[in-house]
Length: 358
Image 1 (cartoon, rainbow, N blue to C red):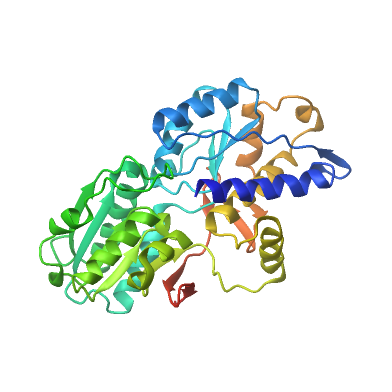
Image 2: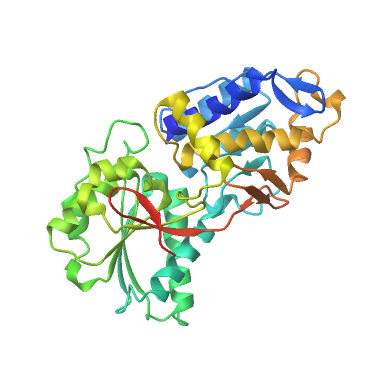
């Protein structure tokens, strides 16, 4: 995700600067100076990276890669009254908060609600027995997502006393998000804790892409024929490369339809391919959109506020007034707390591609 997000924001900045900078008003542009730091995939690294950026005089922080890292970095940004815009942090922990945090993505609640409705409507959990594997190294996201999914499944079952049975197995993976792989995870051991997998209608995997691929391989080798459900954190080509045939049929909820063929979306894909030699994914798309959101906020500010360093409180007020900005796949609605409101769609992996099925 980190590389994808870097590419998305890089493309946006390069395109803006090629025209003289970010357009803030008719005839007024300001060049964008992009500084990229590695957070090391740890909360300590996230806090350190955000601190160094603020000390270096940045006007706004874009990031971070996961909800867990974002929560750590936001502590520093909040203390220093510096705006942070996230392209990927979906945890409900950030929802409806009057603070310096803004995002271009929905919360875990929207994703979980969409999945629960699809599973119920298509009779994919007839026995209401669901196994769940959760990576708590990104607990701010994965625990919120898994709790939300359980809540909505129980709500749809019209009971909270057992109609929806969810067995949740958690584990910690210190390497996830560092780019070093996940060699320390005992995948068979984690699955063994769930007992007989044949007792379950579905296996829900709330992990990153590499882990999800390995879990899918093992569970299919063990003969599990039920539904595989993945979190958005895992939804990338890395999952398909790692899981191979085992992840065919895996279901996700997403904020855009990859088969969309609007001129704007196709043009973005073409520009991204020309620059980086491959298709954009959700991380690169949303990081690109953070710059469009930022531009929408800055364009409402007085020109005198845009000279030199942009003060955090002024930018926060400006972004809080933005209710819509142009996204890659269409207009993005945002509420007064800076939480995006985008329609959710359900996708399934078919022939090594993510395809809409709802």
